[in-house]
Image 1: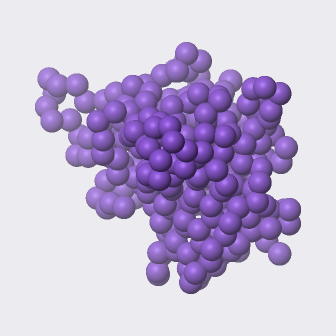
Image 2: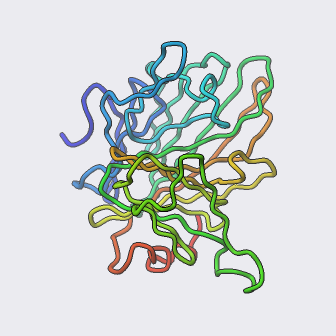
Length: 293
């Protein structure tokens, strides 16, 4: 059988256009996404982990996960190693975790879009404790190495005028724009996985999409984000690149969440045929600014 290791015990959604596997032995995580019969576009990272503090390790695993922003190790790196509750209905699967140490319950619902190689991916974080937390939903997709990510800059249709600022690039202390794996163009930038060292870059995602081209496919995730308070200088779209994987990340607004309240964050995923031409012109080649999630 195609797909990730049996230990994931995945639930599958399979249509004529797309295959997706959602783990049940941990999560909530999406562990597989592909066209039927093709390779997984998501990373499969085995035992790769990061230090979660207090002697704990957070298992990266690969695939797609839901984190809590802002990035605070004690809050964000809550482990998701326990079995999730899975509900499978028609072309939709919902997986839900137990409450973590902060009383937060995370769930991801994946729904196949009829007649398209597309998915609606809905994220939810529900509070079950008495404390109100200011948090954001943070959707992170780890993709297998060997491809190139594309981040759109500025507004759909370009700058309002030549005398006004058009683009905003957000950098982290370890971001190196001199890395040859990063190319900054007039309206888009690209990041490969052949970086000299792990690097991260972001932007307010005003054009509503991030993309990753690998082999003969392009993985695109779209998002529409409204709100007043955001982490990371407003960078609602982010790319983190390392040698073993590349992450496409979107973030919702910071929202106070009290007991029994929830926050929600929707992405739509698409698998396109890779067009000819430079990757940095991907948005134009696929008319990504002309359609919406």
